[in-house]
Length: 482
Image (cartoon, rainbow, N blue to C red; front, top):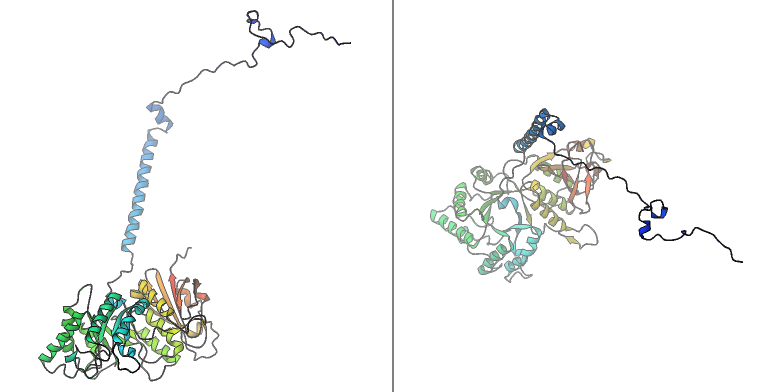
């Protein structure tokens, strides 16, 4: 039977619009679900008056205080800036002097006769030297001194006649052109030319000067004579000097240089008189005393130390005349490249033993590394030189022989950059004592070494010099507070 449900007739009905319900607020269905509240009354902000602004900012006194504070800030900032500028201007700093080309370039001494054919009868040695120019330039060579271009029996009166075994005069003219193209200057060596008739008459002297003009016109950059040649008096040098200056310009200066063979020549010392009267630009001295046999490590160390302690005055130029033991050749190469002055190398000096067995038997890597460093570092070109003395009793090296060769060192400084060069010519290892390194910057960077096996940053206390080793380190000054 169906269930009967009784309900209000309005249950479930939808209230629709109708005139009868318009005012019926009693029925729940007709009330709005949300009854809006009364909207708040809007208040509008009004701009503050001048008096109100001053009161909010603290009053007129605060405005004056702020103005004075800003003024004080800018005055203080300008004062600090002025003090900084004054300190920079007045503080001592290195001033790079003007260096002539003969002070910056690397000199290379070469004999064209070394390039003659096996029989020694054919010409073309000069042409073979021309073929070497790109190789020499790649090594950093800037000046070539040609030896033996003139026969020893040729006098200064015949300077326009070269040794025909080496090549013809047109070939030599082409060689000078090729050398200029390669960026290498040429200096003619006149040490072995017969000078006995130099001072015979004024006509002969004029003829010699004409010969010099001939070569200067061809493009040579100067001439070299030897101080052992008594025919070269100060009067002769003055005449030659005048001729050389005729062709000299700011961009292409011509020079006279003297090779010092004897420390003293009876009755004349060209080296001393030339320097005192400014008649030559360069005086070449032997770094190691010439000897008929290779000097021992203590002898080389003693010679090096004597030269380093007396290094001052005029611009020096270094060369090595005597034989050097093969194990010390690389050490001498480092010394000549890092000493203040102009290094002069001979043909073949750039070759050294390879640093490891994987390389060819001979290598020029060390020479190339040193020449590149020397050409780019101001400290090595015109820095302040200081010879550093070792106290052998303070070396932590485990020396068992009291006669062992002590290490040598010097410092080339330019501003805050220092180059420390260390040498160990002996056969025992040496470690640097921390007390010795206290006056130096504590850390730096390896530049090169004779073994080409040292790289990266380094602290001085960690260095141990191996036998027959030289090391070049670039040190940097740092703030001790950091």
